Length: 615
Image (cartoon, rainbow, N blue to C red; front, side, top):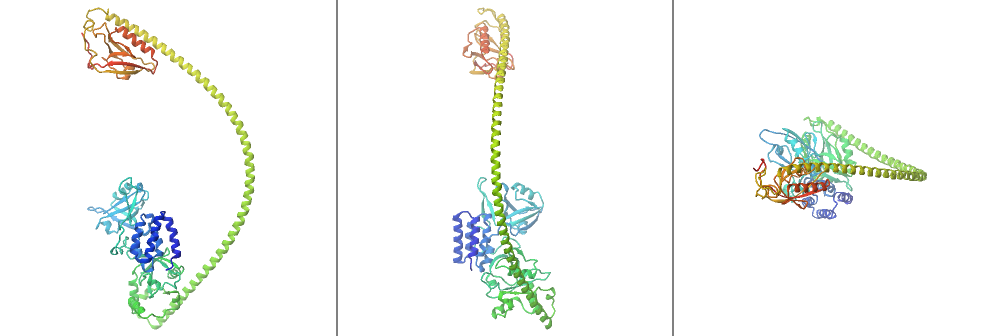
């Protein structure tokens, strides 16, 4: 078989679908082995190891012209079908005691479609013909190409009746971990043996095969066809001449021609079928095996012989062929329904029928010749018009280029003048904007300086007013405390119930810590202290009150009853209460808003949930 042209087309398709040079070399090596060994099973197994994703399945059809005639049907049964071919409709109805009986995987979030990953044997899905490796295209009329896995499950689980439109890919997506890339696995893993090659993955399509027939260098196919009546429509192979090309391709009597070069033969007229079969030297055919045998058996029974007997006698002693045999075709007229009526035909009726067939054949030949002549004339006319059109287009293109060149030159000149004008305008505008920008910046700076001076003055006045207010409060508080405490050397009992210098556990014995209190604007420390050398606390300065809202209260780390040891490094130990208040006031006045005052305190070990007063 001359495969040079088909091989070139195949080479281009392989380069398009397989980008890895190493994989392409392996593919061509597998084809070379097939040409040497004629082992089609080994070829398909080798291909399955190389063609490892659905986007490459188209290569199986591209390889078909390179397969030997006697292996075409065998190869079609072994090779996976390209995606989108032979769509099937599966209707399932949920029974109360069982599920639909299948599982799916995939989804838009994984970058793949929805695939049937398991079919329970004996389930409703199994009986209806759903297969592992089917891709689900539609669910109840809804396209699910961009549906995620969960959405598809909701469409299926939420109904008692579902209608699935599927196509068999023969592969399922595999993903071991969520982060892994998607890989593909054939439903029938590589290593297919001879006992597995005859099964088809499409239910109802077991007898359907696709073959490629190359008629270059051959006189014809060597088959005759017949059209069925209205109750048995279709184009069927009636005879296959021994030793013909049709026999090489394993065409048999009773095979129905379903499709030729993409055109359906299911409802085609007889004459149109002949034109299609004779109009090309390369035929991509879809054949349904042996479905026309009941029709031909009935015909031969009425004529007194059987197809099998006729075929056997033909092999034993070849019969003279009509003139049309030079082309390798024997054309039969359309069968009428009354051909199958069980009546004896008279001799003159047979002669008339034979004459009518001859006239029909002549008419078909003439129609075919006219068709070829018309095609030739049409081709010549098309070439002539194409030549005239090209010449006219070339002339128009030349004129257009000249006009375009002139227009561009003029446009370039105008653009240059416009550019110069725009540059001058832009420079003037830029100069004006720069002057305005400088004036605006100067104004903004002056305004900002004025505002800053006003703000600083306002803050200064506020600080002075606050200091004066704090000074007044301090003096008033100091006077009150001084009146309460009395002379520092007095040993009389105080309001706290003990003489000065007496030992007490109030405010002591806890954990010592350092706390930084941030002094915010308009927020004083707002605490009250007691103790000192003139108190029963033995010289300790203790916080007697933390007023809500003050800086110490907001800090939250200094509590009522804590002993103050130091403030900003100044010791408050063994000093009078008046001196302690004076130091606190000075520290507070020296701090600006945002500064921190560092306290060193000893946490109180008393529970101040209830008020405690010493008597």
